[in-house]
Length: 223
Length: 188
Image (cartoon, rainbow over all chains, first blue to last red; front, side):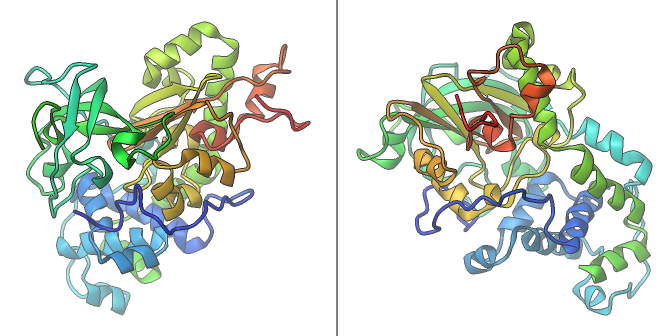
């Protein structure tokens, strides 16, 4: 979706302000939201792409006004409500208002270390040949799905070069919709800054994104 | 937030002790000191460095760092001619096993909007100025691939132990928004 989360190239946000000796969390509630989000995702009622969409799918003003962990909390509440696991009324009440649904795969303390160390790899076996080779000139498609995508707006319609190939990975655009992992070849695509930002851009700058094959077409095609 | 945690706990959907351990792990165990060890080893061990660049995920795992948000690692090397910077314009993707959780500025609109257009200006916000002819390469983390910058070993560190070298490898220089700096203020 063309949401406020897709920030590359936006103006007006001011300088980057690093914090000296920044703590991992700035408040106890941030600790709990982080851990709740990690733990609640464990049973697999949603996947990482559904999680990202739940966070980014909100009005621009709301996205920009919320702090990072406020967005995480809002996303988590959305995911839980959509699946009928926790209702808005229950959050207001502070206790369950009905019998809980049976949920398997609850994250136990003893599983935490293994979960973190194994992670959730997204590479899958390839079922076909990659369409593009390293060095190929390609163009990012000019697409504007209203659903989840990982193709940022600033590269859409722009020509670049295939820099590397990472194997076949879970395709976020379908995975976020519950339409399956649908693994697709994943490339790193490099763009010259002048092809992205115009003639005044830094000639010594290039920017790359990781792009799944369905995002790309040969550069010869007129977009 | 407390209400939500309370409802989830009462429904049996979460185990509070697991939450406590998650928090403790990312506050105390997993952080940029992990990545600093990777970098320091690459500085003193050429064979490891080549492995780190060619097969980053297993090379990093050989030091004990692997897993969540670091399943598919890429390491990019700074040189006198080339400076790398890592960003996630769409959210906050970051290599957790080697750097821990991202700082607020990395997740903020100023960084996410500007790193892909004006990384030189972003570096200035961090008090770092590079020569005008330095090539800049920005990596936008749009997939589950996670990037770690291998900074240049500063001059004046000959004979330093791995441990001492690791002490000057900051989080920022592994994102590409800083350079390793000697305690006396020298760099590069």
